[in-house]
Length: 271
Image (cartoon, rainbow, N blue to C red; front, side):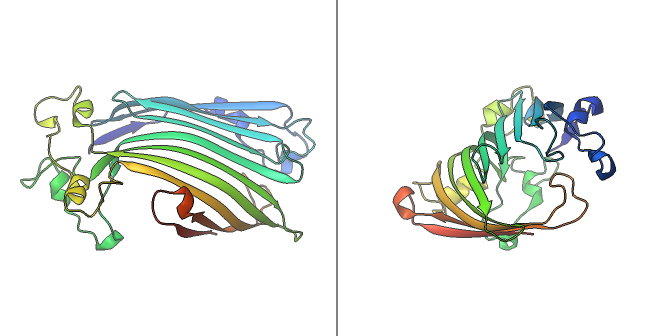
C-alpha cells in the first residue's frame, strides 16, 4: 500500500507541554493551566486524507509541585476522508482521590485496513506478491487486512506499597471489538482503473471459511478484564527523566462469567 505522510509540527504550540530542563525547573515553574495542540495531516492511497488534532492540557496549580502536575488531560481526534476515525481521551491525576493515582482512558478507534497475517507469529506464511499490485500473483492490496473497530474503557488506580518507589495497581478494562472484511467500496472512492481494489476474499475471510475462526467470533465481541499489578518507578522526572527506571508487571484476568468465551489470564511485563 503506497503511502505518503506529512505531519505539521508547530513548535510554538507545543511549547506549553514541553518540560523545562532540570536546571531551570526551580527558577521558572509553570503555573495554572497549560495547553498545547498539534495538527495532523497525512495521505494514503487507499484510506485517503488523514486530518485531525491532538491536544494536552496540564494543570500545575500554583507550581508548588512542578514539574509534576495536578491533572493531565490528553485528547485526540482524527479522521480520514474514507471513513476512518480515532477519538481518544486520557486522564491522569494523583489529586482526585487522596492517596491514589487515577488513570482513565476512553477510546474509539477505527482501522479500515488493519494488518492480519494469520496465527502463530513468524510461523505464519506471508507472500508479499499477493498484495503487490505490480506482481503477476497479485490478489489485492487488502489481502492481509481487515476492518477493525474498537471501543475501549480503562480505569486504573495506583497506591503506595509502603516501600519507596513501589506501588500496587488495580483496575478494570472493557474492550468491544467489531471485525469485518475490508469495505472495498469505501476505499475505492476516488480511485480509478487498476488502482481500484478488487472484490475478493482476504486472508481473514479464508480463515473464517476454513473454520480457523469460528462464526460466533468472526465479527468480534467484547472482553472484560480485571487488572492487578506492581509498579517500580525511580524516575526523577516522569515525562522527561534524566535518571531512574520504570518497571511494571500486570496480570489481566478475563473471567468466564463476564465474557462470552472461556476465561483466560494474560501477564504483561514492561521494563
